[in-house]
Image 1 (tube, helix red, strand yellow):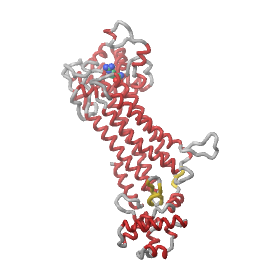
Image 2 (spheres, helix red, strand yellow):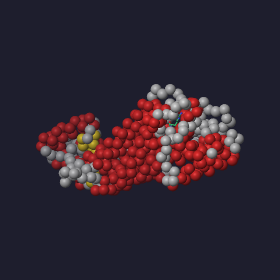
Image 3 (cartoon, protein in one colour):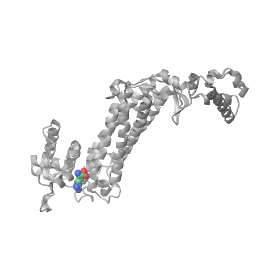
Image 4 (cartoon, rainbow, N blue to C red):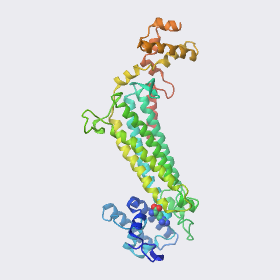
Length: 459
Ligand code: ARG
């Protein structure tokens, strides 16, 4: 195919250079957005008297035909066109002749691509939010069914204090809610500045109506500087940052899933349909899905770093380096979507082993804080109580006992404030039940969190 810009060249582009230059193999996926942008551009040109009505009608019909043919598979991207913009324009001109050649009036591929990516990502962001919501539903449902399950809570991966297992799960629901907020923030800013009409970099001498195209394309405003309009890829970075943070959350969750499903923990059992076996060890049931999500997090961080690094040091306005934006953002979006589609049912189908979490909570002196609080509530300063309980824990460790088995006389020898009611006070059930402070680890608090999160995702 002869290049649209062939006019000033005496020789054709070298074949390898042509392949190297072409972005069609990855930007083809923006065909619907490119066509929509072109339709609105043509309408605007006609409204402004820049393009004859008859040409506009031919363009709109022609583009609609191209869209239908791509969607039905009749028209494929098997072409040596330089990118999706050239592909569609060439196909349009092939179909409708000279009117097709008038479409690119008062426009450049520089503003065209900037608008296409925004339109594409806007739809992807909506899908992402829906997928994260589905995961939140799965997590809250699982938290609801495990609200009364007692488990150890950890710091430094050391048993720390007893919690409702649902409380741990709801921590992830909170993270995921913030992820939705970040994706929505990024989308709102992406939609606030339509770059169409910035043209190559300096705007145009034609009397265009940028507000019209912006509105028709669903933007809430227009970009205010044509150089910025074509050079800005902040919106890609913002969405990728939001996705990178979301992946980090999925990765932390995955890490826990992997630990919890190990023989050392056995807090959960993953469903067979989300685990794999080993080719050599018959006993293995591996949490591959969680491991892959953890692994793919690195890949998504890489996508973000790749684009940040590509943009760093680029002079204004458009540079071909910027064509690298698409593979990075597409990969990040594709990857997180793929992860969520497997992660959500994996969570929904896992079972929590309450006996094992309870047994784990019985060890490790995780009610020691509650024993100190017992003394504190009877008037002893917390630091003094902390010291006494520390000594008792030391004695128990030496004698192989837990606090619940340590005899009352021995307690009394440490402080006269100890009474028989201490045993009820430090029972695991009591320790968890009592943690009813706002956002605390009690089953009741977990149920309140679940109710709140549910209102947030249905709003
Ligand atoms: N394929 C190009 C990209 O993705 C479109 C913009 C090309 N503009 C240009 N002046 N070469 O960035």
